[in-house]
Image (cartoon, rainbow, N blue to C red):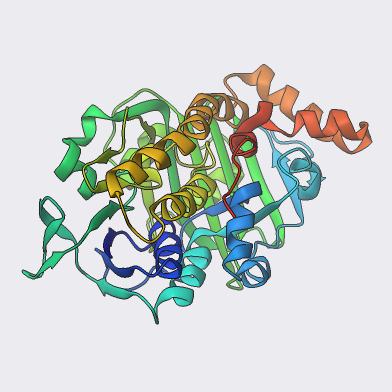
Length: 389
């Protein structure tokens, strides 16, 4: 059996690995010119079953070795004053029993390297047309496959070709996400520097590249802005703190600027015939708020498990959807709740969050875990998911 996968970030290579284990031939096309490797993107989390999938791939030791090294956090608030400092281990106490935080680019590089010798990767190429499962690629070639999978992210080209325009499925959560790199301007590595103000959360944390810091900006706003640096500046307005002002001084020089709205992809079904979607392409819970990377890893494994060595592909896709539907619903329910927790709505919430951080280390274990679980949050969405042997 031959599978054609669009997307070589995380879900695509994980799916390729498991399909190869089942004896499939796999072709992966990716629009970027080279593999997405290195420290690019923002830090992503692997929870519970997603960690199990990585372990079954024999990659957990490498993933753990490449995990972030953020030992503590310093939280600043408007008006200056002494920051609140806390060990990051306290902040994730209630997240999950199994948890690894890693830069997205590092994870993508590891799963790509593990599959590149057994999978036909075609970079700088994308699917431009589909006739059933026969694809015309952007380089003019055609690929006839038994299965086509769109693992090509929030703005999936496969989804648009098969299911229609993105606007039918994309639901804006009323917030924006920006990610970019700056020098280590705070000189605090491996400490995370965070700033919170009403409708704004800014975090700067070290990468594995010495002297390079990644900035994550979350802004609550219903305004419509261009997805560029000017749009980000317009949403932030006058810098509410000297730390934010120093970060913005380096915005124009950032060579990896990313800015988009935080939206979910909601579909009644993400399969049609022998074409299906995996990861954010089919069921994004929202970048940075819903555990989308864990959902993508677990979803790719489940898809390969139900497909097995072939057989009735539409029936297998139906079983895949049935197995994943409730975790997807859970992830999309908790996305707005997590957003409300990490981006304060008003000054009172900013103050309350700081006070919780101050007392957290002195609280009993069960209370500490409850306060840091984000109300059940991204980890809990996969709790009821049993991975096939």
